[in-house]
Amino acid sequence: MSELEAQIANRRQKRQALSEEGIAPYPSRAELDLEPTAVHRSYGQLDTESLASEAIALKVAGRVRALRKHGKTAFVDLHDGRAKLQLMVRRPELDDESTTVLENLDLGDYAVAEGTLIRTRTGELTLATTALAMLAKAVRPLPEKWHGLTDVEARYRRRYLDLLFNEESRRRFEVRAELVHGMRAFLNDRGFLEVETPMMQAMAGGAVARPFVTHHNALDIDLYLRIAPELYLKRLLVGGFHRVYEVNRNFRNEGISTQHNPEFTMLEFYWAYSDYEQLMALTEEMISTLATRILGEPALLWKETRLELTPPWNRFTMRQAISQLGAVAVGKLDHLADLVGVFEGLQLPLPDLVKDADHPVLKCGSREEYEERYPGTEVPDGWYGRFLVALFEETVENQLIQPTFITEIPVEVSPFAKLCPDDPRFTERFELFIGGMEIANAYSELNDPDLQAERFRDQVEARQHGDDEAHRFDEDYIRALEHGMPPAGGEGIGIDRLTMLFTNGPSIRDVILFPLLRPETTDD
Image (cartoon, rainbow, N blue to C red; front, top):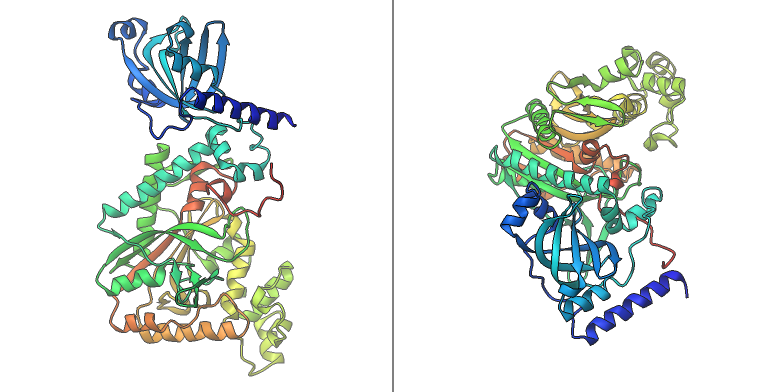
């Protein structure tokens, strides 16, 4: 028998001993007044004399995190996750049931103590305990040393231990909750209505991504876990809800990295009679306000860099960003053949969609060469925009540390955005980058049903040519648009990545309570 097995066996014996004495090791409820944090909040400012004069009697519950026995006196630390309260337990002052509980008490057990608040000679706030009851007997001991800080996999798999032993981890999830609460309050104060849309959909829509597939037994049809709530939320604009939002869970069948998890959370909202310019101002205000409320100032520390969140934030068109930050001549950014030449010159991998294509444009390093060698040969649809976006991702994205809006994004990757009136190759869309990560995506919503149908057909064609992330044709959404949707701006903000920023978290899995992991191969 291993040491761990011996400890578990001993704890089970103690549990049996409690039961034999008529003491329930897992009672249905607990009678208590406060937990340790609240005790300190309410009475921590009182000195020895004040405590003695007021004779404050309390019932306090928590988890046993320390147990020290000295003859007839025992000292027990009760924790509630945030703070501890010391118990001073004198055996002669206990009744038989309390004595039995004390004798069978272990680290990790949940207990409730009744007594009077005092201060010890060292000044520690302490409950002079006269009664002790078991609330939950822990049959598996807590680890003496938690290895989750160094063993990342263990930290994610046993998040419950990570929260117990790692204050930084606990704080991350408290900040996450504060962010979500603050976002809701911010939008509610501006007249937005919180709604819920389906998570299982007959057609995965609203984004360019691979969905997860499930099966509905009663209907005998395949359904898709949602990749975005966008098309349902915009149907609500048609229905007369002109300011709506949803804190939504999305599922995308994509890779896992420090910035990607297949299951993630977004705030998505739609604002009738606005456009992407107004959304930029709203986003600046929202995030800077949240930082001030949660962190105390409109700034945060990301890795070793202080990020300033006071508006206005940096703004570049995608071409401006590539030219100024990626050191690519602006004259090389307006034609596909020139972009191909840039990729070759920088030795960058071609976008996935065209890696195996055998088109003449891939054999030319400039527009002039292409037009001379292959006169009259058309440039493939969709390639220009995808090359430009890929070049941006390779040369610029990781440089966008301070908050930066990237605007005028190619139409090929923006099927639901309105065109820029002065250049129809691009859309009234922005992506917000902070800390080198995309945090938000927004655009002036396309509300012309015929043009939207054309965009769907372009997506279908791309899908037929091998782009399995391209959008399918959504006839019902077109039908909704035909009834009339007001001009609107729509935006999605990644809550996981925003939490990473607010907590200086190195990985998205650090801010998701239970991230997706491979099944364990051991049973320890």
